[in-house]
Image 1 (spheres, rainbow, N blue to C red):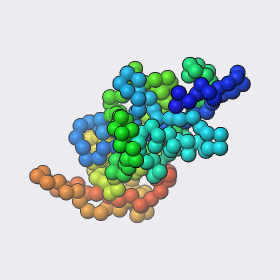
Image 2: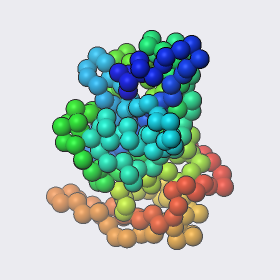
Image 3: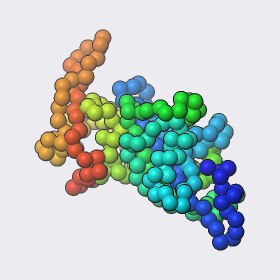
Length: 244
């Protein structure tokens, strides 16, 4: 994105508009702490990481620019990813090459649905664990954009159904719990299955969340955990925020 700026800014009256995207993915069924299983997509190189972004074309909607930036900078096809406008970042000195205003976006992708369209570019991108973000190695004001993205997702998890844009479908209740624990702490990670499902009672009662069997667990004792399928609208919202 930055290499494109110089020819665009030609006078004191000109400003460029860019998009920068905060992308999250959740690694369901894996080991490790919940915050290690929520990953953020970074591009660049060690010591100079950045969020995927691009300048916006004159006749291009912000969302289209964001998806184009993701293809170009990450090598993944984001056509089916959840994408939502986050905030505008317009500090005068945010870019040393000229005045650039960035419209930040939040994107959510399912691990099982990732489609690589450019293997070489995707190989250079880094799915960085939430617990290991190299804040001091992020360029420009991308730490601010990333923190805003984390806070926005944390907030949306409390009042909406966007969690199901990150989880496989169907999913284990343990993964639903661990996803929330990554943003709300170990107290949530200790909740029982029944207490987790209690928070989603409206979805169960309206048949937007339905049981579909059990998760196969080879070599493990005990009853396998139940799986559920989400059939509702991830843009929907709950009547009351989660008490977590």
